[in-house]
Image 1 (cartoon, helix red, strand yellow):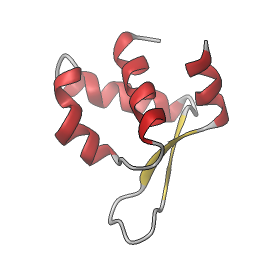
Image 2 (cartoon, helix red, strand yellow; image 1 turned 60 degrees about the horizontal axis):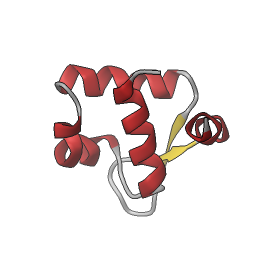
Image 3 (cartoon, one colour; image 1 turned 120 degrees about the vertical axis):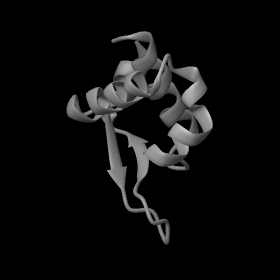
Image 4 (cartoon, one colour; image 1 turned 60 degrees about the vertical axis):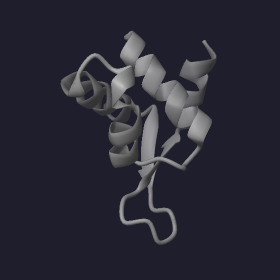
Length: 76
Protein backbone atom coordinates (compact mmCIF):
# COMPACT_ATOMS: atom_id res chain seq x y z
CA UNK A 1 0.00 0.00 0.00
CA UNK A 2 1.37 3.41 -0.96
CA UNK A 3 1.58 6.35 1.44
CA UNK A 4 -1.24 8.09 -0.45
CA UNK A 5 -3.50 5.04 -0.23
CA UNK A 6 -2.82 4.77 3.50
CA UNK A 7 -3.53 8.49 4.05
CA UNK A 8 -6.79 8.17 2.17
CA UNK A 9 -7.79 5.04 4.08
CA UNK A 10 -7.04 6.79 7.40
CA UNK A 11 -9.01 9.87 6.38
CA UNK A 12 -12.07 7.84 5.36
CA UNK A 13 -11.85 5.87 8.60
CA UNK A 14 -11.61 9.03 10.72
CA UNK A 15 -14.61 10.69 9.08
CA UNK A 16 -16.73 7.50 9.05
CA UNK A 17 -19.26 8.35 6.35
CA UNK A 18 -19.03 12.13 6.57
CA UNK A 19 -17.11 12.42 3.29
CA UNK A 20 -17.68 11.53 -0.34
CA UNK A 21 -15.05 11.49 -3.07
CA UNK A 22 -15.89 15.08 -4.06
CA UNK A 23 -15.50 16.48 -0.53
CA UNK A 24 -12.20 14.68 -0.06
CA UNK A 25 -10.92 16.07 -3.34
CA UNK A 26 -11.98 19.63 -2.52
CA UNK A 27 -10.86 19.72 1.11
CA UNK A 28 -7.93 17.30 1.33
CA UNK A 29 -6.35 17.26 -2.15
CA UNK A 30 -3.25 19.01 -0.77
CA UNK A 31 -2.40 15.81 1.14
CA UNK A 32 -1.68 14.05 -2.17
CA UNK A 33 1.11 14.68 -4.66
CA UNK A 34 -1.35 15.55 -7.44
CA UNK A 35 -4.96 14.91 -8.55
CA UNK A 36 -3.94 11.77 -10.45
CA UNK A 37 -2.38 10.35 -7.27
CA UNK A 38 -5.63 10.98 -5.39
CA UNK A 39 -7.71 9.43 -8.18
CA UNK A 40 -5.56 6.30 -8.55
CA UNK A 41 -5.42 5.84 -4.76
CA UNK A 42 -9.21 6.09 -4.46
CA UNK A 43 -9.73 3.61 -7.30
CA UNK A 44 -7.23 1.18 -5.77
CA UNK A 45 -9.01 1.22 -2.39
CA UNK A 46 -12.39 0.61 -4.02
CA UNK A 47 -11.17 -2.17 -6.34
CA UNK A 48 -9.43 -3.95 -3.44
CA UNK A 49 -12.64 -3.79 -1.40
CA UNK A 50 -11.19 -1.61 1.36
CA UNK A 51 -13.68 1.24 0.89
CA UNK A 52 -17.34 1.25 -0.11
CA UNK A 53 -19.83 3.91 -1.11
CA UNK A 54 -23.26 4.02 0.53
CA UNK A 55 -26.22 6.32 0.07
CA UNK A 56 -26.42 8.63 3.06
CA UNK A 57 -29.71 10.42 3.62
CA UNK A 58 -30.36 13.36 1.35
CA UNK A 59 -26.76 13.75 0.19
CA UNK A 60 -26.43 13.87 -3.62
CA UNK A 61 -23.30 11.68 -3.65
CA UNK A 62 -22.76 8.44 -1.74
CA UNK A 63 -20.64 8.61 1.40
CA UNK A 64 -17.42 6.65 1.87
CA UNK A 65 -17.00 3.99 4.55
CA UNK A 66 -14.30 1.47 5.39
CA UNK A 67 -15.21 -2.15 4.85
CA UNK A 68 -14.17 -4.79 7.38
CA UNK A 69 -11.25 -5.56 5.09
CA UNK A 70 -10.34 -1.85 5.10
CA UNK A 71 -10.47 -1.71 8.90
CA UNK A 72 -8.18 -4.74 9.11
CA UNK A 73 -5.73 -3.17 6.67
CA UNK A 74 -5.71 0.07 8.65
CA UNK A 75 -4.98 -1.82 11.88
CA UNK A 76 -1.76 -3.31 10.40
